[in-house]
Image 1 (tube, rainbow, N blue to C red):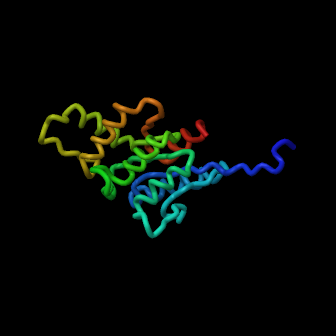
Image 2 (spheres, rainbow, N blue to C red; image 1 turned 90 degrees about the horizontal axis):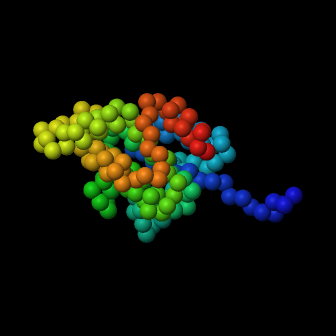
Image 3 (cartoon, rainbow, N blue to C red; image 1 turned 45 degrees about the vertical axis):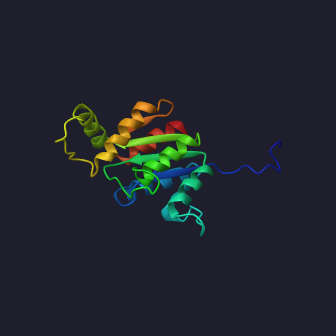
Length: 171
């Protein structure tokens, strides 16, 4: 066998999203990733290596460098604000993966995506109040993402099965 003696590393897939509102989605995605023989990297499963020098947030960004793929799930919650910019940690994780030129799959909850189109139409209206997202910065981030990123899919989803079906066709 030509591959005898060669150690092939298991591909690592970082799952990025807000935690509490999407915890069940994260678990289902993790199980799907594992069923393919890949390693799922989720902070709540102690898959992020922490140290005493970096913050927990910085450790997550560093861990993305060790992964081949990032799956980003954008729901209706902003999450925890990043220490490094005006976005959330989830948004910064996605930016880190893009900067690191990782393969990225982004999924936006369908009702958030629909409201984002309404937001874009009414962006200059100072009275616009989102009904779906908890922070207008979610819409700003999605708008910027769709405007600037052209080399990876951004897919709407209604259920975790939509995400799994899309990933199955790609992975």
